[in-house]
Length: 309
Image (cartoon, rainbow, N blue to C red; front, side):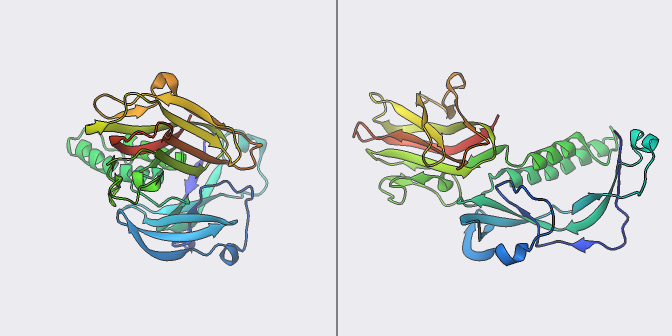
């Protein structure tokens, strides 16, 4: 069915500062006294150029950041236009499928559940695509190849923005690393660069995320440096579960001999399902070697990725 969007309203509400992207699904659509129950506050923390804000939703701590719309772009809230009584022929021809602008906004605040915002967050990376799309479109227009208002890359950007939480990237500082605050054990840069294992006998690197219903693939991107020792004789395991009392799914993993690779291998993916009847839909996952007691060195952790499949 075809439709159209009308953007010519003379006066609409400006919701700048009041649009939020929450890491959950709210089964309600309508007016609510949001400001009485949801009160974000600034913090003194700044990570990767993002000023961190803090809020709580139904007892769960949220950490977020406010992103301005890219230059030349605005955000809009659309609603279906009421046309009164419509003929059946009008509906079949798409005449009644008309949307109108009800509000606009110049920024959006997105929230993570208990993890710091990062330049690797999906919503922020999707906005970066708009700048890439503009640059590519400009080059093509300059070459007189075509003159569209929206290029394929713009549409890809919009798709990535709407998909939002399909892929969640955890930089090292968003993970919980046992002995991570001890610089004799780990070096974890503030800027989100890879974490380097100096030396531990207990390897435990974990993360968590409140997820929607669906199936997910969990992986770590890692490498070994020239100082790597202690990895030959004992198995490394990845484990994941849904909910604090959920049952673990696990995989024995092999570390790469050279280069940077994702583990586990494609043939041994660690997949887990968040079911509709799960009371606690929080994913808990981790990378472990805690059994041998042997000193291990030289592991580089680039990131962990949770991807909806």
